[in-house]
Amino acid sequence: MITTEILFMAQQLWDYHHMNHPLVKSDCILVLGSHDLRVAERAAELYLQGLAPLVIMSGGLGNLTKDMWTESEADQFARIAMQKGVPAEVILIENKSTNTGENILFTQQLLKQKRIDPQSFIVVQKPYMERRSYATFKKHWPAKNLLVTSPQISLENYTTDDIPLERVINIMVGDLQRIKIYPAKGFQVYQAIPDQVWEAYERLVQSGFDKHLIKE
Image (tube, rainbow, N blue to C red; front, side):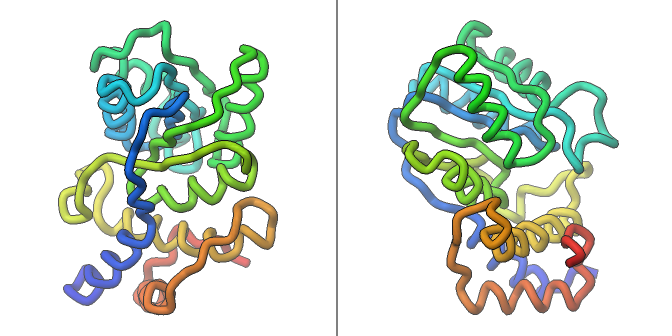
């Protein structure tokens, strides 16, 4: 049962995972694939606002989608963006990556093959993965200018039949654990975690929201 107290703690994690970057014109919109198709809609919205001339869709089938779909995240995202009015010729597709680190590394390889060298990126991701995407990108591509955004939606309104609240909380808890431990593994840059956010994390784990944790 998801109580008012659990919702309060989940909101603390939700807020922390957001970077709240004001967006400016950039060279490229990099869209990180996932089970949330609204990320593709957000990317299309940004392109149509004129915030970048190039859109890269990155994502094969990851932990959350390999049992859901047979078509890659990137290919589905590209189709959604084109349905929203993004021209096919401005979209590049990287459809082999299976995690956030590979999203960045395989995108680097794709751009090198295409002889394209953007200096500034808007990364589009799920709301509760903004910060981890930022930390991963900065580890692998520190010299690039980076802004991160996501579908503009509250925690209360985010959940769907396919993405229920319990699952969202489990994933947020797991992502916070990764923000904590991944810098030492060389996967991300360090991000400070406020004490009250970590306390909320620990209480959520104790309440059983541990399905997305790495078992160390």
